[in-house]
Length: 270
Image (cartoon, rainbow, N blue to C red; front, side, top):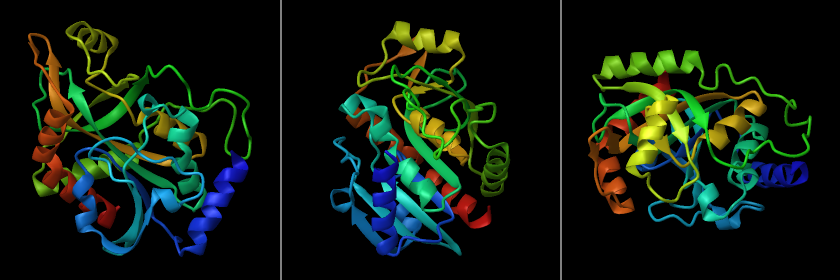
């Protein structure tokens, strides 16, 4: 893993990908963020050594390098999921690359099912904490101390400083921002009514199929993380409706403008 990460990092540095302030993983609901970026260059995943390739409809497959105000960002348009058949080590590989490109601040986004009765479709949830129920752990196996310690402190998986700042940005811009715990399951099936009930009973406010492995790996390497979820369907008691991936993408569109404005303002002012 170490050699592959260094090979990929060197490839990107040779392309001029340097001096980056934020790494951003653009999940469903933040796909339009690149509209706010003064793009310097775009690199398809297929051209990057050791990178997986996303197979999910609606997920592009490219790194976008550019400026947001005075800040330099490196954004992933399209992420990788355990349910696609990748190992969690492969799905989190780009986060390791980001760290060794000098990135200390990571923003992650996703679409999720809301199980908090106070949520509505189209809401944006600031992730305050997570519950990991994906069956493979990204730090399973021998630990390479060059990446980080064997046992990783997760008491503040999502940076309080970043969370407080994005709450202020949201208030200043009049953007409604929910807060809650994100629970990650394997997927790719959407949850049954009983599974939504399980998520609620375990303390989750939203449920999805990504993000947590990336944050674990980021914390392994000492990065600061902020996470945002777009609530694209509801699994609250008495309201569990039929849902498809197309429904999720349509619902995410409801929040896309606000998400793009929120993250852009956050990056410019943090």
